[in-house]
Structure formats: C-alpha cells, structure tokens
Image 1 (cartoon, rainbow, N blue to C red):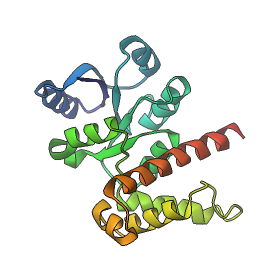
Image 2 (image 1 turned 90 degrees about the vertical axis):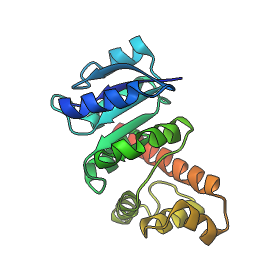
Image 3 (image 1 turned 180 degrees about the vertical axis):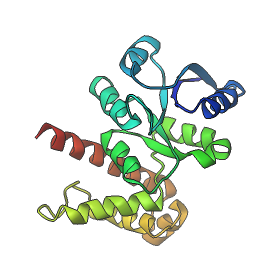
Length: 201
C-alpha cells in the first residue's frame, strides 16, 4: 500500500485525481491540498510514501515546494504534474529534486504506471526534457561536463532526446531496458546534486 499527498490548485482536477486514487486498492490518499505552503508539516506529520505536486500553484510553486522538501527528506519520491513537458519549469523542478513528472493530459491513462515507476526508483523522462539537459550542458561552456555525466549516460540522453524509446535505446547501445532506466535515474541524481552545489556556492 502506497500512501500519498496531492497538491493541485485546480479544484476540478484535484477532485478527479482524488476519485481515481480512491478507486485504487494499492494507494491511500492521506490528503489533497490546493497549495504546498504547509508541505514540510505535512511530510513530517503524515509521513507519506510519495508526493504528487502540481508545478504552477499560487502562493508557492511546486518547484519551491520540492526544494523545501529536499531540505528535510532526500528520498521521498515527488512526481510533478504539468501541462507542458517542454518548458523550463519541468527542468527546474527536476534540478530542484523532483523524481519524475506526468503530463496532465495523460493523468487518466498513465497516473498509476507513473506512480509505480517512481516508487520502484525509476525516473520518467521525455525527449524534450532530455534535449533541455543537453542544451543546459552546452550553455555551461566553462565546464565541458557540468553534471559529471559518464559517456554512457550522455549517449543514453542523446538517444532519448531524439525521441527513441527506452527499448530502442537498449537495442542501440546493447544494454537492457533496466540499464537504460538506471542511467536515466543517475542523470536525475546528478542534476539534483549539481543544482544544490550551485545553490550553495
């Protein structure tokens, strides 16, 4: 049984996600809130397994909320809900420490598989976000490899940015789908670490 808290400011969407979660035997919804202003208290009080977090909310954005949660809990999976997957916000959320993200238009079809994936330690990433990571690396010319990615991680990222599926990437580089997944998870972790050292400096 996975326990989770939902943060979504649109009441209709919040209600429909709540209804979906209530119908699922393996998930227990601990609370649904219109903003994450109390997110630190919620995490401490409810001790959820997972947070579902809208990116754009009044009062405090999902990105700020993720950064806050990461100051007290490094490991709790945080799945971002977003309207667009090719904007700076998603990239910023990942750098702040998000575990993955889900497009709102795919919620009805993919919510539970996305939850399963992040709970199993996966990190869903789309081609457009892979391209943003590569662009960010190119912009930081001073350091050729600001995120300290291995050659294999760069290959996986480049392949993903061209729109290849995990399966195709596996075939192209003669590695298993699980290995592709673990490379993508490592890339996420390195983005988190990099943005934290930048914030500290």
